Image 1: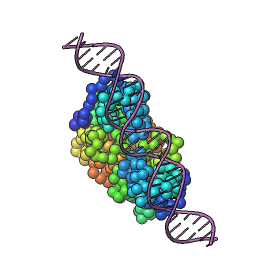
Image 2: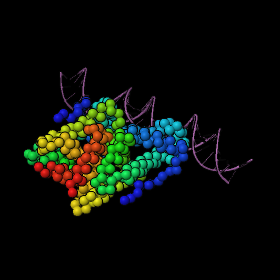
Image 3: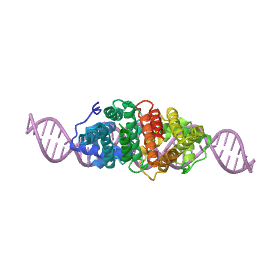
Image 4: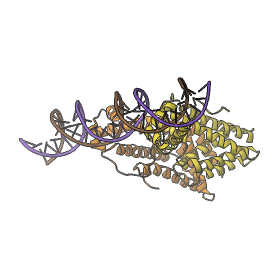
Length: 196
Length: 196
DNA sequence: TAGTCACTATACAGATCGGTATACTCGATT
DNA sequence: AATCGAGTATACCGATCTGTATAGTGACTA
């Protein structure tokens, strides 16, 4: 299980902290290309000089945005998993419960990684590794739990199915396809692991 | 079952046809905000005057792009469904098979509606209805098929689960999370409908 | 006390953005 | 013969984009 992709992080002075917070909110709510650095600086109460002294470029700001969000999500999930029951089935349900709570608070517009991917077409973009890294990590998490739950079955296929349901629920939540997509996904995951 | 959202379509003269084709390719491959109208005109071999005489604005070009793609997908799916077996289970599998083939030819970067949604935050944008309309239509398709297959069961929950798996597979395909996500999704859908 | 660090304020550069204006060509219709 | 529709070519508009330059302030520190 690899740690979060850490391409290049920056020491966060108070001004940089505010700039990154503003950028994160704006990037997520309006999209990356739709948000200019002037707006970020204004919303953060920071001059463009400070912004460029700390981050060097808008691209680096995007990288920090995604890396920080990835880090936050993994910490949030780790905390929720820490209080989950001991069985693999319970821990799978805990993942979906964590996503459900996270989605309600931080993800009204769906998965930030998926959304960023829609705007970043170049695989050599430094943010690309963060996006694919998080997805690969989630798949390996589901596969590990599936193996624990069903060592005799095709646990890799089961892990991939859990991944599909989870990703689908994030999209359905962001597009508001139907209410409580994460809750529906959790129940489906539960029933997938119910029979012995 | 509603027909494709038809907000406002434009008569396609030869120049307009080439402009829309170029715009569709560029919007899908690079993202909407990342593509300028000058590039679209140049790639289409058309002047900006022609482009604006036909479409009026970039926004309208985006609307036409999504509406045409929605229309193409529904026609493609209808054709595949026409040659599918008579049972609901077979028809569900046919949906996933159609998506699989479509993804291989037209969707290397995932679902155009999901990607567009990542760039369009305003629910009043004329393209918004096309995006949510396609998702609602797909959900009602899956729910209808689920009802046919399992009239005695909770077919609405089953339809939502099929929707989640399908959406998840489109995302997983676009982000290349693992190979043949649509194939994996089809098998999962098949096993979901296998027991009587 | 001299230097460094984080920061503000403001102005500007060069490019690109969506969109418009003017003038012209060509072919089909009436 | 006159008109109209679809198109080309080119120049331009104001706004916005990312990024840089210059000058200065206040706090902390060696």
